[in-house]
Amino acid sequence: MKPQSEKTVFWVGTFHGSHDGLPAKVTATHDDTRLEPYVWTCTCGASRSFPTVHGVFDTAWRHTHPSRFDRLRSWATRRFRTAR
Ligand SMILES: [Zn+2]
Image 1 (cartoon, rainbow, N blue to C red):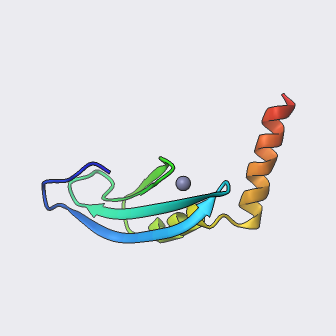
Image 2: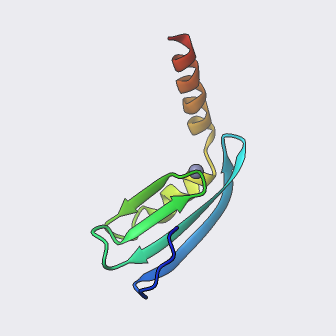
């Protein structure tokens, strides 16, 4: 994340996990000046924004802890891509 000089960004939560066989860390922040104040970003470059805190923790946790279904889906996506 970019360094913030203004005090509008507040830490919401950090999620440690892994996906695609690599460690991943998601940091969630809250900033009232943004259109969607709640944002999380992952060390892999992925990010999501939300109008409220609802959904932030679920999606951040799921991003760093893919379920069996998510892994199957990404495996199927890779299979589909290589089959083309
Ligand atoms: Zn990630």
